[in-house]
Image 1 (cartoon, rainbow, N blue to C red):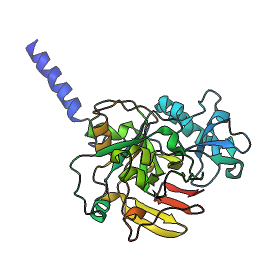
Image 2 (cartoon, helix red, strand yellow):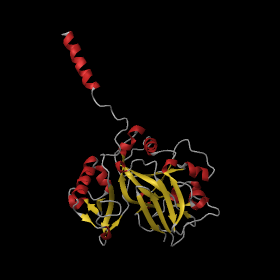
Image 3 (cartoon, rainbow, N blue to C red):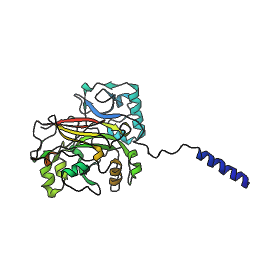
Image 4 (tube, rainbow, N blue to C red):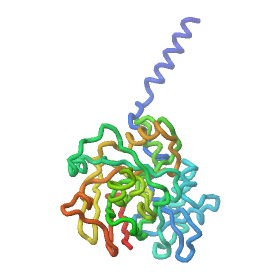
Length: 323
C-alpha cells in the first residue's frame, strides 16, 4: 500500500512538473480582446444612444444592438457584463455586419454618467520640474463631477466665472471589473481600456479661490472632453510609452511621453482601491505633462474661438472648440 501511494505521488509530481510555466504577467484587460469601443448616436436621434466597435480608427462603426438586440445601449452596461459583453462585441466586429458610416453618427464620450471620475495631480516628472515642485511620494488624488464629461468633438464652454481656463492633455483609463483592495499585479485585469482626456481647468478657482481646493476649478460643465474611443487594454501594448501632445490653434503646447508618469496605471488602481470600491465605468485621468498655459511666461489662457486638440499615440485625438 505504501509503495502504491509513493508511486501515485510520484506520478502526480511528474504531471505537475510537465505543466508549462505560469506566465508571470497576469492577463491584461477583461477578455484578452483588442478593440476600439465607442458610444454614439445617429444624427437627429440624440436620445438613442448606442455602443459600437470601430472597424479601425476613424472608420465605420459596428452597431452592437443592431447585431444583437440583447446587448445594452451604454458602455457602462456593456462593461458590467464583463467578458460576455466584450466577447459579443468581438463577434459583432468579426461579422462585418451592421456597420454604420461615420458620417451618419456623432461620437459621444466613451462613458456617460460614471460613478466616479478620479483624477491624479502632479503625476509627470517633467510637469513637476516645470513648477520646481518635488516629486510626490504618493498619488495626489482629486475628482471631477461626472457632469463635466463631454464628447470628443463637443465644445468646451468658457464660463463667465473664470478668466483663466487652461488645457491639460491626459491619458485616461476606464475600470471594467469591480474591485476593492486590488493588488498591483492584478490591476490591469480590472482595466477595460484607455482613452484621451482633456482635464480643462479654471486656474483662478483651482489656485486662488475655494480655499485652494481643486474641485470647483476642475468641474465646470464640459471641462472633461473624453474619447474618441475606449481602446481595450489588449490593444495597447505599453500604455506607459505613448507620445502625448496638445495643440492649441494648431500650435503644439504640450509634447511628452507617458513614460514620464510617476505612478503608473497599476499603482493608481491599487492605491485608489484602498479607499473606495472601483466599479465598471469609473474613469481615471492620470495626469498631464508640462506645457500648460498657467506656467508660461506670461501665462496663456483659452479664449472663445480657440481649438484644442489632444493626441495620444495608438489611442487617437479629440478636438474641441472653445465657445
